Length: 447
Ligand code: ADP
Image (cartoon, rainbow, N blue to C red):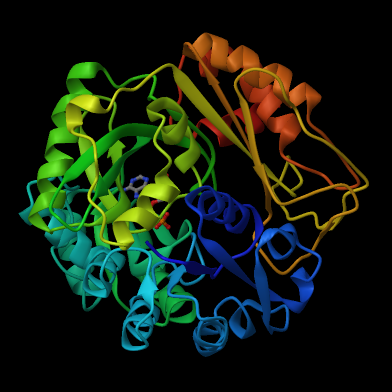
């Protein structure tokens, strides 16, 4: 096992990784930007290194400074968390070259699955259902039109290198295609540095359902059930739950087996997530794979009792998974609400100083946060300030628990998404599990 790990991240996920390391008896090194000198991840790590000014590109994305920080502290491994360098194959290779273990799958897998076109091709070959669309990136407007005509409008143009809900454009008719194609291509170049875009069938009001996978370097690979992530704003998740209110035991087994077979095919190791859209008839279609830990991993931890970060570290150290699929049981129901420093009406970021901060507690409550009273939410990074996670015997109890926990959660000085989550908990359709990816915008449109 590693003696010392460097955490190339900040905020709640850096703290989450420090917690796992402490329980495993591993020393930790935090890296931080000048804007984060007062952060909890710096305070709770055994050592810390300042890696640059507040801007991401000069600190948390500064590969050379992070590698140097490993060298001066003798850290043997890097945990990238999510975002930043977590899916950067070049950084994973740099680590390898410097004899530092990158906690994640091998760089080749990160590269293949990070490109959405090659991920689609691999998924198809490995037996996962994909949406109708182009088999490769489309080279020009004519090719995009040919594909669109063959699969029928509406379609969605997607950046092959896209992520974070960006780089997508829905096209409803042939007339709108030329303009959208140009815009999609230039957005892809400016945001992701690549002109590659592809065409996919656009599904109206599907549900986003994803499977958590875990595999060691010895070929043992399992799925840990699904998460439903259809409560989204601007194609970004805001609330997640496990299990999904619409996935039956039979469907879970069928989809889970398909996912595990596909992962075995690509020899996946580490934790990962295979994302699907489910249409109104209940058909699943692969959309992408994330080769890292996800923001919403706690809901899976709550229902399986498996600590995904500890497992990820053990796997990277070469240890074998000790359980078998029959040992994996889903117990009860878990919901996570993302508490963002945002205006809940229009989702514009709302940085500032937190003047009062009271965390909820009591049975079945977990809060993953790096915020505290007097903490300054800066404008430089993601607006996520806390994740409120509940676990209960069933979905109804989980909703009731979340409602009372949201009431106990006091954040003053900045606007947050807490009022929006309260509204969701009261909504009769949400309570019945009847929702889809457009549900939240429709709910906000109504009020
Ligand atoms: P990203 O990597 O940016 O998160 P994804 O491919 O995972 O992109 O898609 C993010 C979200 O965009 C999905 O959860 C869904 O809301 C929407 N989306 C993506 N593809 C489609 C599609 N073909 N039809 C309808 N909605 C889609």
